[in-house]
Image 1 (tube, helix red, strand yellow):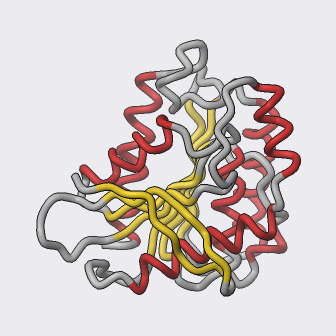
Image 2 (image 1 turned 45 degrees about the vertical axis):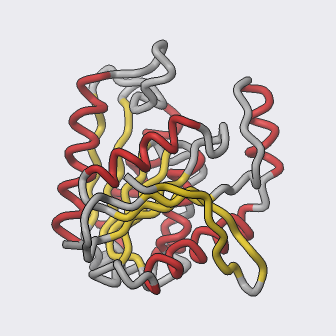
Length: 228
């Protein structure tokens, strides 16, 4: 599959990311893939390739601008130092790039993110009307329910049972969607026995093959239902 590092516009300044094209002539639906707190590493690039293999043009914006870390303390520092409003702007820029791409149809874009990227996925859903579906894996730092008042994207949250802090917050958020009577589709799946980062196959201490396989299938099903 063709892949390359690209630049795209973010409020008149450049953003960058990793673009993967499916095989064939298209047109194709499109998905933005948002990194964990480690940066745009090989695991996230591999995830972008997995979605491209399923027929989606994928773009993973580089929110750390070239920095990739491997130690938890470094990752925590990078995540804390991240300019989140700017990061959301860069994600919206990636969405706009895909929407304008000649090979992208339909023009409603999907988004999927992991950990820090899951929270940013939920934030981005409130920042643009160009998203049709959002999938957040264990979305740390998710916005307050009030932020979703104008959201139009269908939202799927995927969490692990043993990821107490994140899962408790996401459960409360999803319940609040119903309590507020928000009209957008939303769903929550909690995987029994699964840890935080259960989807990350490069972290064997937390990777859960069964949960990961099911979650990927659910993400694809969500995008098929609300994008394609």
